[in-house]
Figure 1 (spheres, rainbow, N blue to C red):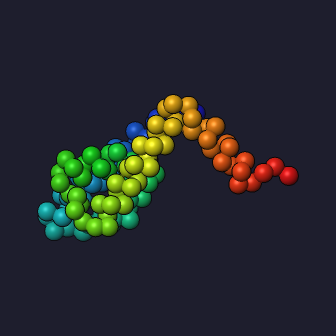
Figure 2: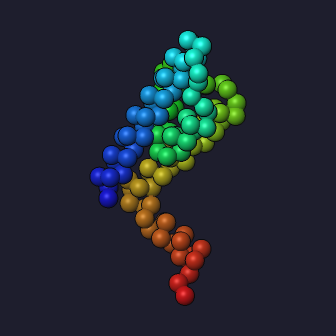
Figure 3: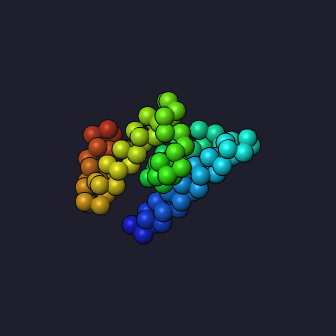
Length: 105
């Protein structure tokens, strides 16, 4: 399971990074752009670190609101989840939260 999560995060971050770089190139060339929904979607799927890093690297969409604020919010959420997961606290937290939401019958 842990191995799958690591592969997933690597893949989504690489895709998010590549999409942000491509969108910058498309913007410079006047070509059809990648939608903000797509960029934020990949960030939300786990690629926030890659998307954020690319936006800072090529200075793309760093001040466009509300995109920049949404990107930072997703990044903070993802970093929090990664910290909980790496410390071993995510599973107990999720289990106790689910137990409170839907107690067993």
